[in-house]
Image (cartoon, rainbow, N blue to C red; front, side):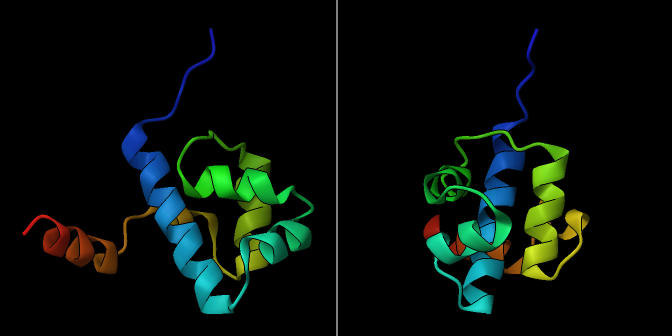
Length: 87
């Protein structure tokens, strides 16, 4: 049986990839090209529609200049944004 990751973990991953990608000044297409992935795949990860493999996490982290745990850890800026959205 195939198991799915939690929605919250996929959401954290999606937000972190978007944040790090934008900090690097990459479009989704450029990130995909640098990672050897398709641009629609990056978009679907950023919309937290996909489970990614460990090898894909490693490639994304390396390309974005971070370590894998940084991609999977909720950042303080995301918590602040969520608070403002809920007001």
